[in-house]
Length: 356
Image (spheres, rainbow, N blue to C red):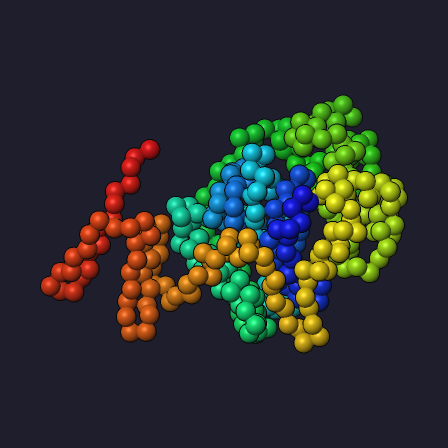
């Protein structure tokens, strides 16, 4: 965690609420899996998104949706140290089953841009802006927050399978690698060795070692340690247990090994990570939550909250919205001219895009 200045976390888990929102410049160097729906919007720079089904670069002002229980990793490009991402989690396990339904069958992971899944992209982006605007203002309302959370989940739910770019390495080795990742992800809290993983999957010790090193870029022991650290984050942020207990519960040998690995992975001590989180979390007895953002974060978020319009249509070139009894239209990249036909039809002439 090299960029604590850019870090903010509104964690509903802290008080049993299903919605969490974070803004950070971290990089995720290990595969993760959670039961919640994850919606990430790149505020600055770009990230490489890797799941079981696709691998694709997500650029600035693009969205990625990760379905519940999808193994995934979001890695910052090494040339772009200042990359920032806004991530929303909706944890259906904290809702009544009659309200949440079966989330595992309702979502598919995918990328959303101005040209890819564009109808959902613009709707999700506007809804995220509405959420950010509400959290930034003094008139935050829990019922409104519930509505926005439900609308975000509804927009991200897929009625049809999304078009996705498949991983280039669709081979037996890649499939075996995902089996190993799933096993580690499920059993990391237990005493676990490379031999255990190889035996359970009926692989040789040498093959398992080479497989994990090739796809994770890390030796087995280090990769397992990183998985354990990530698996301990919720307990660490809850602030109830000592570091020693958290270390043992996640499978680490002791507090010293836990602290050393944590700092190696995030760049700060676990105590500093917890302290910064608690400083960012301003939760009162009345259930009120206000975001405290620095000027840099406000600039990155401004385009999301700038205008809350009753949008009738939007694409990469134009936005049409209703303002009172007036229908308004704006070209995003400027226009070359406009004319109005006798029948009242407006013609807006947009500049032609240059071919690549």
